[in-house]
Image 1 (tube, rainbow, N blue to C red):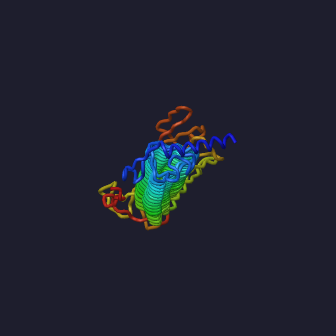
Image 2 (image 1 turned 120 degrees about the vertical axis):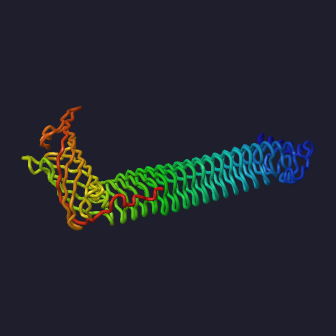
Image 3 (image 1 turned 135 degrees about the vertical axis):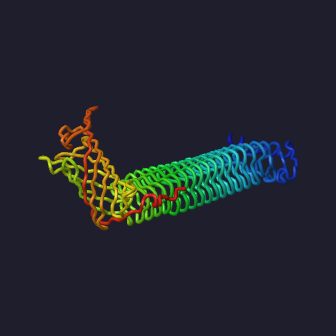
Length: 493
């Protein structure tokens, strides 16, 4: 009974104030044809200073003991449950649950649940659940779940959930789940989930899972998951998993997993694989570089392309228009090697497996080599021949005895060899080599017949000598033009 009496007394007081003590003024278009009152007090409509006509008034100071429905606000408003203004709300609002307006919402709005505007929302809005606008949002918005704009979203938006705009997103958006723009996305987007722009995406996007753009993507993208653009992608993309662009990709892409692009130019770096339909530039892949058509440089354990022009380095470089040779070699100290030679006809890679037939124990070796082939006239101007060639080659070979061992036992060699190609499937070659041995294996000093210099340092033995290599090469080969006639333009201009 005591609480009921208090509420009845308060309601009566508000009605008395509304009818006798508060005067109204009409300012015409200044307040959207609403009448202005400096103060208004409302228990819950229609119990208040403006009674049943509350929708016709705006005020500078508004107190809603439970909640209030009014025409507009031009100042300060506080409500235990909600504040609703039919035309607009401008100023400072605090509500236990919701601040809402049928027009624009601007200023500083604090709500335990949500801030909502049918039209634009601007200024500073902080809500426990969401900030929602039927038009644009700009300024600073923070919410526990999401910020949503039916049109554009700009400024600084922070949310544990997501920032969503059916139009464009620009400025800085930070969310725990994702930032989504149906149109363009630009500026700084940081999220634990993903940044998604269904049209253009540009600027700086940082995501714990992915950045995606249905149209163009440009700028800097950093993600713990992947960068995806179904049209163009350019700039710097860094991902611990993958970068994907289905049509065009340009610039520098770095990933711990996969770079994929239908067409790419620039530099692709991956600890896993680089895959593209067309490539111009450079690919660095920890495991695999793959392209349907490629021009430039490929560096990886395995390089594959249907057509390739340029230089490659890897264990295997398999190209539809490249070489696929089988080499048998003999070198000083009695090593016989088998080489699988791939790459282009100009720059080749060799996977090498060898065995020493002169020892009374088993000594094996394997390694890789990279070489350049030239017409003999490139090195010896007075000799002209289509079938004579020069190979300049660098190899690294790891040696082990009886059983596999990771102990340091390496020979680095530079070889200069002259060869004669008898036909497209057979050639012989040979020449001197300069060799450096680095080993921690004591019996390995008999791998060489002599040494020009044999220092020891930090537990390692070094031996240096001049040796020789002779070999025969089988399968697909071709005569090469002179270097000054060769096209080294890979479209990097």
